[in-house]
Image (cartoon, rainbow, N blue to C red; front, side):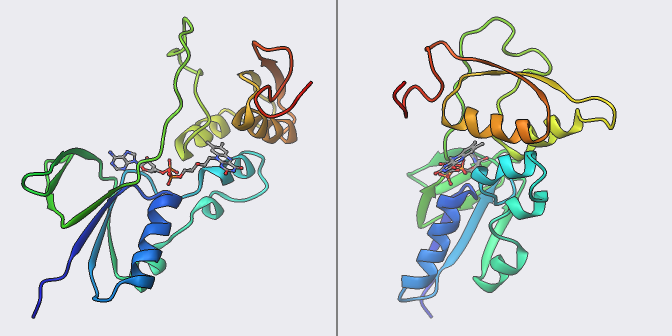
Length: 188
Ligand SMILES: Cc1cc2nc3c(=O)[nH]c(=O)nc-3n(C[C@H](O)[C@H](O)[C@H](O)COP(=O)(O)OP(=O)(O)OC[C@H]3O[C@@H](n4cnc5c(N)ncnc54)[C@H](O)[C@@H]3O)c2cc1C
């Protein structure tokens, strides 16, 4: 019996989930697939709808245990890849587990770049990029008080997040260094 190719995929965002579906669709021989996921498989673009209370958190998820079972994917939840060793074809995780691979896909997405502003790391100052960020914003809601929010940057993601907070009737102030919103997408 020939040994199965082992695909290791780091990340569980839309790129990773599309990759596993595509591998399963086109592979000639069944392979092993392992996902290394430090967050639940979800789509960041749905986060504003959760923030606006238009959908529950569960609808931000793009793959559940049934999906992974159906496609025979092993998922290492709460797992973070720390280093890759090409010579030995291994990935070492933060808990020091060593994972051998034949093929490796790095689907780790991007992250917000914090601007050089004093106080950017103070409590209550955060991006709106992950499930945890939305949860921490929602945790500030109480039945009697609405948060007062200062949103820095009126770009694409900023405006979508602003719209979600507007729907929640939060008190909003936007700071944009250019003289209009969406300066890289729209003219004046
Ligand atoms: C609020 C918001 C709204 C958006 N709206 C839209 C929109 O309307 N339209 C649009 O086209 N795009 C939108 N985007 C952008 C879109 O969400 C991204 O382009 C998309 O998420 C990229 O998918 P990805 O799989 O490459 O990366 P990601 O979704 O970032 O997934 C990568 C995953 O890898 C994980 N990871 C990273 N490092 C490691 C590691 N070392 N070990 C294990 N796991 C790791 C990350 O935690 C993450 O879960 C929006 C983004 C945000 C934040």
